[in-house]
Length: 108
Image (tube, rainbow, N blue to C red; front, side):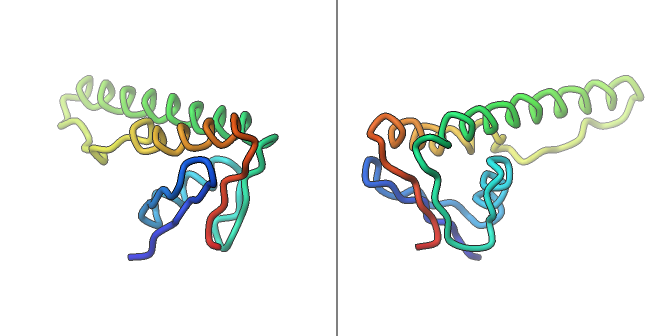
């Protein structure tokens, strides 16, 4: 399975399996098909997008569980690692890079 390697001079390297890295890039509005860069001035919006997506996923999961219980169905099973958990180290990387004024790159 392929991986994404996110790199920053401030934090080193963060490795994610392709489906997870691709999803994070899409949430941030970045093209996941090749190399890319997240510039310091783009980082606040990227962090906000990731956090909003995590809140949305949590709400959707909760709603789906409640709806299943109301129907008397078995609650749906989800990936045990939520977007909130999966994005936390990436958000930390972005925030540290922003504070240092350096970019985050991938695919290079």
